[in-house]
Structures are given as structure tokens and as C-alpha cells.
Image (cartoon, rainbow, N blue to C red; front, side, top):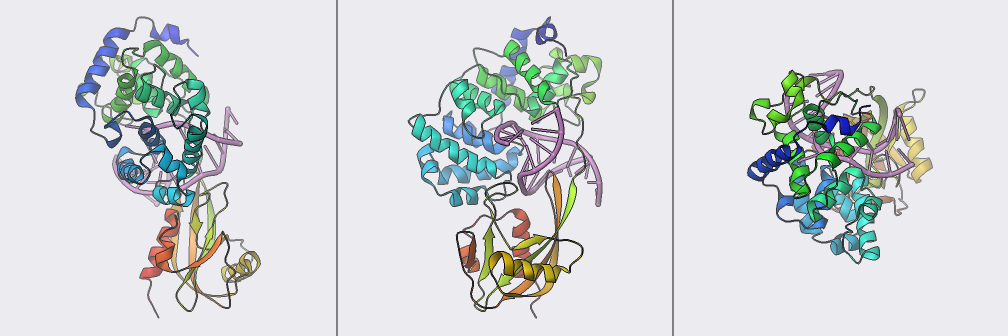
Length: 365
DNA sequence: AAGGCGTGGTA
DNA sequence: TTACCAAGCCT
């Protein structure tokens, strides 16, 4: 791996900073988290933006801030309500980690987001990127904020051919940013790199002819901008077959279950379901599963829909049955029998929202 | 280091 | 339809 000093040698740092920051000042998008530099709002936006598109985040950010306008509000909220505000956004541990960290800020830092790298990076859910983003944007501290955009943009400008899928490569980009970041305006420098990646220096077909830092770009000079960055691909995802059931009682109430606090879709609510083994019939498995795990006696009816749902690392194929509850349900913290209206207060993963929708629209007998 | 962890958009 | 992507973090 090349040394950052060698890579940055002969790079016109001052002119690059001026061109980048000048462009960002003039062309930046008007986004809700850019209204002010409130560290809490910067923090919330950066967590939401992790692996998530700007257009997707905007309505969630506005709703979240109106429900939880300050660190105090979020710290005092029920986790159930925080997850509900996150429903549909994905990577739900972000929401639980954010609330955990916000409570830490309230209790350990008097409600003020700390200003040092050591303290910020220890907050739950705040990694190297988010640490740099909060420090530079909210507090003007010259720390790198290296995300996928920054690695793509700088790999092209500085002609870096290391594989950006390797964790080690991010550290090289950290060093490069330390070497070239503006100390006068680290906020606009970092945001400028990311905005450039989002608007101009895009993955598939970069708009080099419109690029404000074209004259600094070594990949453009060589005509290799589309070959960078180098990124090895990951393997195929595995398929999992599930049987699920929407169980109602004679009054129309529906049975829902809270998922484990660990792992996939942690602490979200779902319709009872089980991973299918191939030797038993699905109906048979569902019936014994409901009796053994929940103590619920039910009569499984017909499947009314099938759902395919793709995650980043696996795919669910779900056959969904309607069913009737026979006898009394012992409710608990993780098992509830609710009216459909009451169920709206609970956060469901999108796959289970699809089941709910299909159930309500199914052919009635 | 590599895999778990969501969702919706795009080619 | 498949594949990849979009402002990563945790273990």
C-alpha cells in the first residue's frame, strides 16, 4: 500500500480546497439538516443517512425531529415510539443505539454532545465516519469523515487503486483527508467531498465535464474514472422459507409477537411465523409451533398470499395463512392480542406490513 | 477480517 | 430479474 505522503506529493492542496469549498458553497442542496448546526440534529441526520438515500431520509428526519426535537425528548421517549418513528427506514439497531447514546449524553455529558474524538467515538452506533461528520459539521473540528462517497471521489482524484471493500483501505483515506482537509472550513470540505460524490462524481457515470475539481483529478487525466474505485463484490445471499399466520379471534383482534432484542429486526413486532423444515407440512408445523411456543390454540386456514422479501444478506419466501384463535390467549410483554387500530402503534418490518396489507385486501369467503 | 444488519431505487 | 447500490457500525 502506498503511503499517503507519497500520494499527496505534488497535489495542489490549497487550490483544491478553494475549488471544492467554493463549489459546495454555491451548489449545495437545501436539506432539512442543513438549517442549523445543532449537534443533535447533525447526529440524527448522519445516523439516518448511513447506507440510506437522501430522498428516503428527508421525511423520516422531519418527522423524527418534530417528535423528538431535543436530546432530552429522545432520551425520555419509549423505545417503542422511537422504533415506530424509524419504521420502514431499516437497520433498526441504529434507532436503538441512537437512543442509548443520547441517554448517555444526557447522563454523562450534561446533555451536550461532546467535542472530542475520544468521547464522540465511544457513543453507541457512532463509528469513525459519524465521529468525523459530527465533529467537523457541528463543531468545525478538522477530522476526516470518510464514507463511500469520499472513498470514491478521492480514489479518482488521487488515483488510489486499493480495494475499498477492505477495512484497512478506509484508514488510508483517513490519512489522505488529514493531509488535505481545510482547517479554515473542515465542515464544508467534508460535506463538499460527499456532495460531489452524490451529485457529480457518481458511481456509474461521473459527470466529469461539470466537475469543479476536474483539473485536480488524476483519474480524469488518465481517462480511468469509470474503473475507480476498485471494489470487490460480495457473495450471493441465502434463501429462507417461512410460514406465517395472521391469527384473529372471534372479535377480529389480531395476534402479534415482539421479536428478540438481538439479531435481525430486533425488537420489532411481527405475525407469528416459523422457518420451514421440509419434512413436515407447513400447516402441521405452524399448529405445533403456536401451541408450544405461545400456548395458543389455533386452527390454521388457507394461505392467502406469498411474500418475497430481500434483505442485504438473505431473502425470505413467506407463505402466509389466515387462522382462527380457539380459546384464551395468555398475553405478555412479547405477545399481544390487539385490534387492528391498536396494532398501528407498533413498529413492523416492511415484510410484515405487506402481510397486513394483503390480509386486509384478501378475498373474503 | 468478514459477515450480520433493511429498504427502495435503478439499470 | 438479477445485481448493485446509498452519507456504516458492531462483533
